[in-house]
Length: 267
Image (cartoon, rainbow, N blue to C red; front, side, top):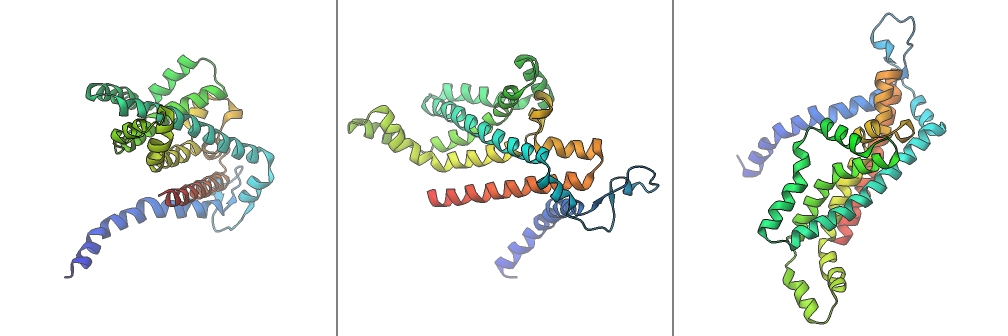
């Protein structure tokens, strides 16, 4: 057997697992979004409570595009994601640079502080933030989502900064550059790929924000992810929930593709 064919056989289980665990559910959600909504009252068949099998309809997508409620929610979801991403990158870069400039003991201490919240149960963490931040609202949602993402962005940026020899900064300073000019001329360009990777992670995660808006926000701060859950469990409109999910996935795919193109051009 040729080595290449042996590698193909080794990849087969992973491919089958991907088909079963990722592609099949995505196709199911896509098909669900094209059903007509089922009648809730007076129906005997359990499945018709949520949708009408065998139907094909774009009504759910028309509803999303036609109703101002969903357009406002889509705009809020995007705006929240952009704000959270900007704050996460700014705070994460500062924290990562602090780790970069610290000695071995300082690095260990700061990394422990960054990672420690992730050892806490997510619900305990959210309710702790709820008690700390007080009343629900927009800024508690922003703070909560930023704190969720900050460790991931910080670790990504810290790993990127570790690849930059500090001797380059010292050389720039020796040639007369100020500390700020040395940073923007030497350090920042070399860490741009890591910054874009952290931005991709933060933006995609914050687009699917659920716990922060749901537990720290008010109904006007609910995102598309929260509305998907509400349509599934409360309104029992599974086609609309699936259509919202498809809309969110298309948005994420567009963002990921755009940032990937930026990363390739920056490389």
